[in-house]
Image 1 (tube, rainbow, N blue to C red):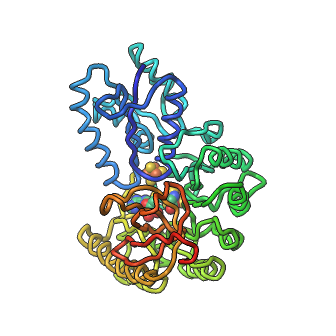
Image 2 (cartoon, rainbow, N blue to C red; image 1 turned 120 degrees about the horizontal axis):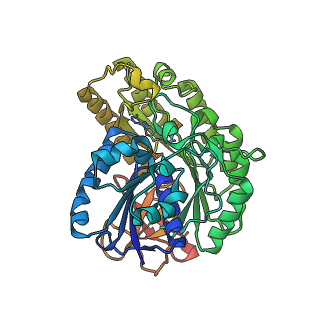
Image 3 (cartoon, rainbow, N blue to C red; image 1 turned 45 degrees about the vertical axis):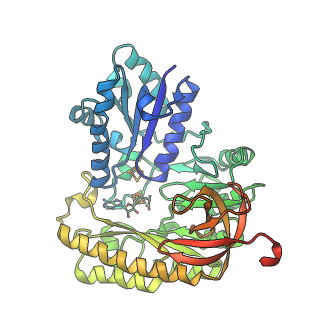
Length: 443
Ligand code: SAH
Ligand code: SF4
Ligand code: F3S
């Protein structure tokens, strides 16, 4: 019996894909290894979104030489976006890699492993083609987590933001049928999952021919037993008022919205091919704040896009001070070969990108701390996820609806997956500390 070990880089979609791959292998008689040391097959599921992400994967691959030396017959496979992007050239660069397999080809894995075992792969058969029809809708993945289950409702992307490599690696957008998704969510509830996170590169453009995303998320939230529904990622150009109202009207649809703006400048947004303006984005924030109770907003920013001047960067700074996000992921622009922006001359030095990144991070940190301090003294409902990595033994953690982490002393033997109320006593950086409210009288 062969055993496998999967390590995953990149986004939530990749994590979901690793669950898919594990399930495909399980069905073909493989078993998960207890550790990387003991496995016969090591799979690395990779990300290409920025050069830094690829460098991390390459370091990881180099790190595998010691296992390969120790274990005769160990097979190393590279999955995911980098496998799709680099194909054979990755094997040429890192000869310890036995095969590469892109995101639409995971069904081929068992057959490929058989061929490898028999002495060699027929390369023409595993050329990593796109398959714009592949949604893996018939596979119910064994989830790695215990509380939250990711559900990919669609795959691929049609947006071609000018900096982004994803559409070239994951092919065209395709949605699973709503009926098929609802069926899976019901199964997840039966299997004990409390929370589902609906995934897509741009969930707002989900459409199965009959059902749009606003209708789908309502149907998911209405499934009996679903305690929380999350979703990612939302593209501002496709976020409808209908969706915002659905989020507001369903208490179990989380009020946490990840809405990447990328830049506060209309000139840069246009060059990025984002297809919305700063004004449109601010209007969306208005709608969200009107229709969703206490929403938490998170965004992504790219600093140092070609042509971004000080004035344009300042527009992003001003937007941060105006919107006051709950959190932000800030990235330095990384040119990706094959994208439209790759042809543009880089105008912002590495040092200036770093300075801009640090400035935004500083501003955001201050806002995050201010917002968290405001929660001290309030009562929050949290979904308990397990022991806290942070502090002492009895300390457990959970998440608020708004995705904030709360650490509490588990004096009442609360179990994973329970929804409980805590009173927030302290805020430290990103983390809140709360006290368990056990009797209803305390609420
Ligand atoms: N589909 C999602 C996720 C895309 S990748 C979305 O549209 O939001 C996640 C983030 O990586 C993007 O939001 C963007 O901020 C960042 N990113 C993508 N390409 C990049 C590049 N070439 N350089 C720097 N950051 C990039
Ligand atoms: Fe990339 Fe834009 Fe698609 Fe997101 S929406 S994956 S940023 S092309
Ligand atoms: Fe990375 Fe591919 Fe996700 S490039 S961000 S793993 S879609």
